[in-house]
Length: 242
Image (cartoon, rainbow, N blue to C red):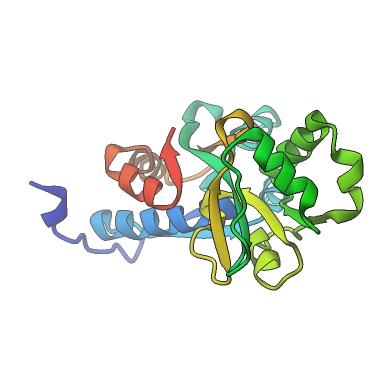
């Protein structure tokens, strides 16, 4: 049967929802996939999205989730400390960093490494995230040799606050974050992804929590998130299947 005509499954009121925590980068995608999965299987998925650093802290502190979806290296650290089941880890998406300016601001040339560096040096302020892309961006500025001159113009978005929100209200002239977190934010213009020479790519992965009681349902959810059926949604949210 074509999946588009698959009948809607009935929900089982006795089965608890799968509890999933993720970073803001995958929030929109996982919420969409969770709704589709629930409609098709009758198994509800509760997706909680917070800053990636905060999500990792909560899992490290012992808070239990059926599934955790974060940057791959963060998942690996939680596996190494016994907080997640590494045997069930799956890679979900490859996510690139984009650049945004306030709506109606002059469109800047970011098509090459040199033009992007010039745009950054001339910006009155530059916003970046607390996540892995933010760390990598600062490393890029250091490699370019402009870290010191930018020191007083860098604006770090608080955990869970989109960089695009800072740009939209004028707190930063230029904003860098995962493309998925910039798409759809009102008040900004997305200039596009970083050029290939300086692109920052993050792989987001997911893994089951330890000691869960819904192993079959969790496995089905992980399988759906990595299936071919999920690819279109991933691209629509500015990411690529891993």
